Length: 187
Figure 1 (cartoon, rainbow, N blue to C red):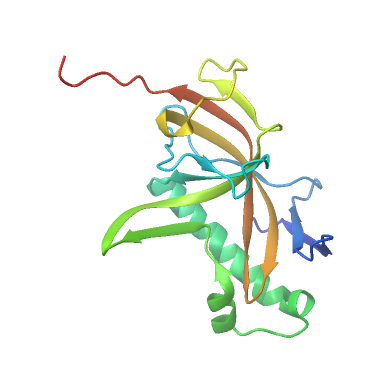
Figure 2: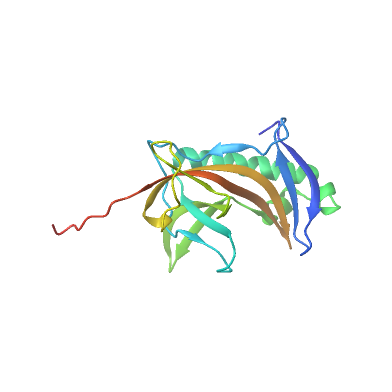
């Protein structure tokens, strides 16, 4: 992470601001979030705000090794935001201000006082996401990601800048998929 660089801030036609993250080779950093021997699951499947959009979000449950890497990623991001705040925000921010603005890649879930497993949210474009079987052969997308074992490959794509918040976008480019066969427990 120490050799990663953050590019200039770009603004879309809609006013959204972001800054790409690149390795010393000029490509986005790549991370496999799991191994085939210990795949991830998604409690909610994929979702999109607009049913006609190809842009999706998907949350993966995280295990201890992934959580440790994501915490390192959060620490790196906050360090960069603090250092580059004059460029990003036109003023030097304090550690406390960065901490308040930064949106962690680790998502905490609670409902009615009950804690649920932490997740990491990734984005993907339906037409561009490549699906692979655990046999390493290309395959079609599953009907529902919720019933699958998954090994996602992501790019640490960019920082996004919103009103009083900043965070990272993890873009899933490839995923190994294996549907879980559900059998009736009463047989």
